[in-house]
Image (tube, one colour):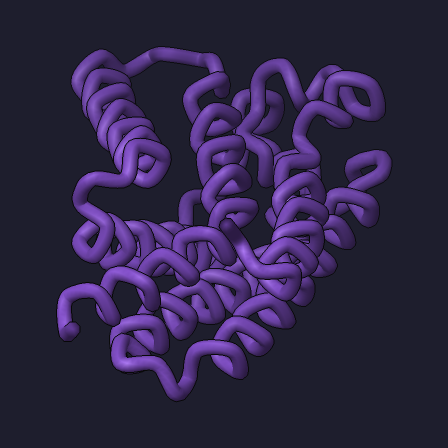
Length: 214
């Protein structure tokens, strides 16, 4: 049974996940961009309600950093503290990357406009770099959790979801000309679910390590 502290943190992480997964609002507030562009297009300069999508990303990141801080306070003295710290640091780096990414929005929306390449638009380069780094750090955090809880169904379903996204991305790269964005929206939803599950996963790591050392 999860402790009351973990349950409280789960509510905060739930809010973080919901805010991070704000793309469905795009179909209502900016349908033209939401239908054909990546999620970052909703935050692009001069797009309607871009401030809302930027704000939700930032607040989501701040909330998950707060959750990480409290999780470290709870488990810093556990026997698995080193690996828990690795997970939490990766999630904090994800949050930092997300904030930087949100504060440096694109100046052009691909698929709707003729945009400069990243070699000409350095903002686009930084935006893309931090977005990729954020995704990599979150994936590493999930890998560490799955390593410690190899028989946990929920964590492995999430990992399988990431693998499916990787296969879809590979298929899209092999078959250029695909103009949709559903795969990225799927990925964002997957990340949101992981944020929600973070307190649960970290609490399981602590339990696992204790059992292995007794």
